[in-house]
Amino acid sequence: MKVAVIGLGYVGLPLATALAYKGFDVIGVDVVPKKVEMINKGIPPIEEPKLPEMLKEVVEKGKLKATTNYDEIRDAYAIIIAVPTPVKEGKPDLSYLESALREIGKRLKKGQVVIIESTIPPGTTQNFAKKILEEESGLKHGEFYLVHAPERLAPGKAMVELFTVPKLVGGLTKEDVEAAKKVYEKLTSGGVIETSAINAEMSKLAENTFRDLNIAFANALALLAEELGANVWEVIRLANTHPRVNIHLPGPGVGGPCLTKDPYMLANPMKGLAKELIITGRKLNEYMPKHFSELIEKLAKPGSKVALLGLAYKGGVDDIRESPTLKIYEYLKDKYELSVHDPYVKEAPIPFTKDLKEAVKGASLIAVVTDHPDYKEIDWEEVAKLVKEKVVLDGRNVLDKERVERAGFEYKALGVGE
Image (cartoon, helix red, strand yellow):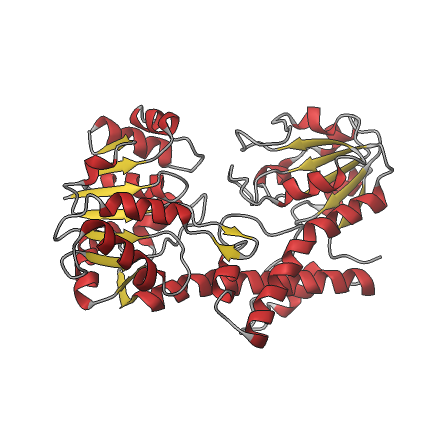
């Protein structure tokens, strides 16, 4: 069976690779020629555990080919869309999705199934995608099939979760779902969960909005703990010993492509207090990079060197989309000499180094922004020889406080009051 995947980014490339690994003949379409060239050489343009080995294998076997040419999707059984759907000024931007749908529609044939994995606002499958495909193809829905099967991947775990996590498949009709099941039943051992398109759309947004609101609550506790002289990490640890409580963790900000936009998509059609609840949580999380910057300003003199540890938005990955560090850098770049360290990131719009010694040399403050596992292994005795002043600000509770203090550092943490 031939499957086409439109968009070869953090979702599309792992998905295309996983499908090829499971025996599908996969054609991947992307608008960036350099990315297509790398993929056809078996080289992933993104950092993802297990992806390099698997991509190399399926490319060498001829099971996956990348192209910029949409014409190669014509004989595919299923066409899966995994393009970005960003939010701009709180409003969903569906321009990439629309472009993909129009290109697909011009080539759509009877019996093909179009699957939207991109995250979309409620009602998009019915009121947006269906109309465009019918308009461009001249076919009526029913002559082709259309579903929303939202991606559920975590960067760093994609090549495991694609094969194990239950797949939501939401159709406009039962026939839509049956057509898409033929793909996903062969991909994941987690099974296929059948539902309607609108339920699948809302469910995806609900998953990430729940997490964002939970983190906002944790951040609210952190702000209060700083005011009252409490330790938010201990507060949350104690609360989570209750069998029905699972409070997430606070931090210098929420990043990534999902939690920063999905709440806006869900809230967009809402009204009144419901909308206010979700937007308030989102705004609180958006405030945290500024708050963390203010903590830095309390600890470091203007003009001194501050080392920011971590540029990726979460630990163990190279993804910098909506990274809190980018915002912190903007707040502080005119007030301090800033150095940024990250062992995973390949490219960024700000200067950074993979050399920890270079990053901390001459620093008056070291601030941990990302919970990279590497930071748990820092030799603080060695770092102490390089810095100008021994002060550490831990934004993720990732460091061993006693170990840091044994090296002579003053240890401070987000969410911990004096």
